[in-house]
Length: 87
Image 1 (cartoon, rainbow, N blue to C red):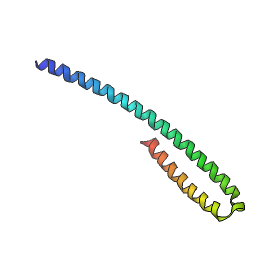
Image 2: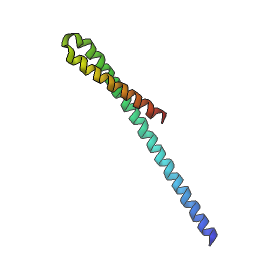
Image 3: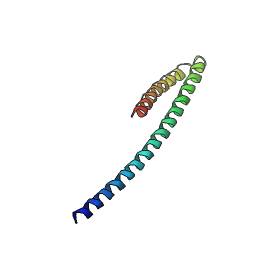
Image 4: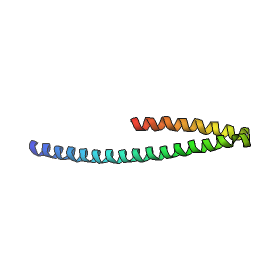
């Protein structure tokens, strides 16, 4: 009887480990995709910021203020992306 319980427990542990491994793989794929999306977003924000900076002389202070906000957001995205990559 004790031997049957041990085999059943071992089987459950193996199944749980397999499920955990699968969940970890899915999480890693999700993190990779999120990292790529954040990098793309960051690249787009930086490109937009550069374009806005080039037009700042024409459009005045409003564009400059928007650019500064975008720059802060880009820096925040970069920090979050680095945290995600090192997690």
